[in-house]
Length: 175
Length: 258
Image 1 (cartoon, each protein chain N blue to C red):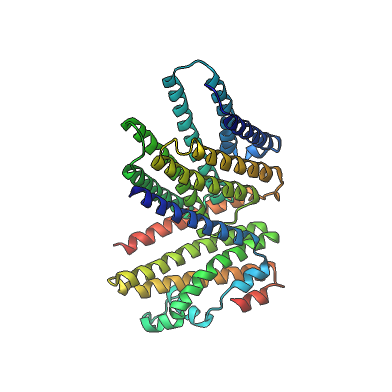
Image 2 (cartoon, each protein chain N blue to C red):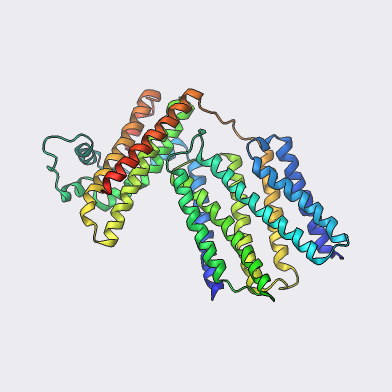
């Protein structure tokens, strides 16, 4: 019986290795056009409202209801898109090293920090959905995810505006 | 002891492939970046020579076994060092650990160690004595751990969107193929016993290692675009940024849990 467990575990490891290899190769070989083409558009105005509500609190801090927040970030599809775009945004920031090595390294690092926060918040949302008990935390997680994603896009756009203004319009449009 | 023609052929080809890789690593100066990997390959070359001599020398079986197992333990320790070396290269692209990379890597590695311990404990190897069974469990553990640590390193880097350079990518590709083959061969070795179809299982493992060694020799022979490093001031800035972010993340997390 132990051999079946062992083989099952081995197969799972082999599939995981294959998945990692494919992902790593994709990250290496993607050119700028492919990276930008891979971005899935978000409803940025809605996302910005949620993010600024969190990052820049005003006098009425409870003006956005949980259902409204959920709708503004695009619901489940919006969260999926944010996660999908995160790695592309990091790769696009790292791409700028061709023109400004030091700034791109630092900005990519900051974006990576934001991406870690965002992915953590998204994991929290998924976990709350599974467990059911911690549903009350979901709006907090959405706020955190939206704020992190908003910062990522802002950092990236400012990096391109400063270093590669020719590519900036296409990037801004894609985001 | 008398070696069969196939065993002699495998020994010769392995020795040639490993020596070629060692010469590439030294000749092309790759050892400066891949130090543990170079030490591991040179250890394998010496190990091959030593065991060739031991096969034809008049030593007792117990002496041979103790030398063999000591070499295996050293080989495993070097493999772990090579994985940590890959982690250092991939997860510290600018000279400082990418935030969360080390934590990510270590949590996956600890989970891997626990799984390897449990699976090797529940294994019932096809061994004549209890001591042999425990030795076989040790081999299973090392094969599993090598693969799992590699996965921990690779998963941590791809999760953070870190791009691998040519040489480390080649090393990782070869390592993953070899670790998977080693994992399944070791499982089959435990389940079917060491004498299944002669030494077929050993031959599969040796041939896989030879092919991977040749692949590594080619990869390390080829040049890769020169990497750039951050200026000392920028590196200090990045390090301060990491510390600051880590401190505020810890503060935020402690506030959340109050």
